[in-house]
Image (cartoon, rainbow, N blue to C red; front, side, top):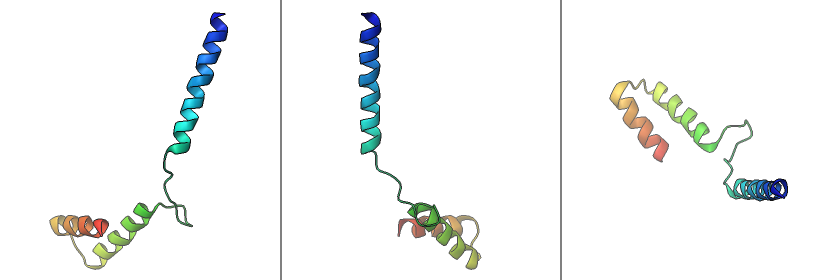
Length: 68
C-alpha cells in the first residue's frame, strides 16, 4: 500500500512539473539560434565599438541601447 501511495504521489508531482514547464514562456530564438536579447547585445556592442566608446561612456551607451 505504501508503494502504491508513493507511486501515485510521484506521478502527481511529475504531472505538476510538466504542466508548469508547458506554461513557462520560451525564449524567442532567431534563425541563428540567438534570442532577441542576445542579438540586440551583439548589435549594441558593435555600435559601441564603431564609436570607439570605453569605460563609463560605453556602459551608458550600452544601457540605453539595450533599453531601446
